[in-house]
Amino acid sequence: MAKRVAKIYGGNSYVNEFDFNEDIYNCDELNIKIFDAPKEEWAIFVLNNRDRRFTNKNSLNCNIDNKYDLVVGPVADDDLALLFRTFTRGLIDINILVKEMKYKKFSSQYSFHTEKSLTYLKLVGD
Image (cartoon, rainbow, N blue to C red):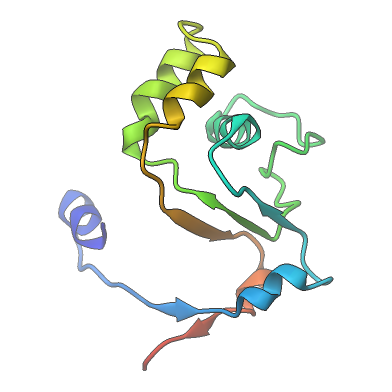
C-alpha cells in the first residue's frame, strides 16, 4: 500500500511497524469501539464516517468527533466499495448488504483516533 500511494502521489514509501498489548481492550482510560464481524452496525458506522455530509456527531455510529479513542474491526477495503455504493444508492437494503458481506474475506484493522490512544503503541525496531 505504501508503495502504491507513493507511486500515485510521489515521494518515498515508508512502513512503520507498531505493537500493542491487546489488554488495552480492558483499559478504563480509553473509549474503545470493537466490531467483531462485518454486521449491520459495522456497515452503518463505516458508511457514516465516510460520508462527508453526515453530521450527527451525537450518534454512537459516528466517530467524526473522535468519541472513540480506538476503533477495532474488519477492514472496509476496495472490495466493498461497489457493495456500499449499491446500498447508498438505494438499490439494495441493509439486509442484502449484510448478507452479501458474508461472502467477503476480511482482515482486522485498528484505528487509533486520539493522542491518548497512540501512547499505547510501541514502535518495533529502530
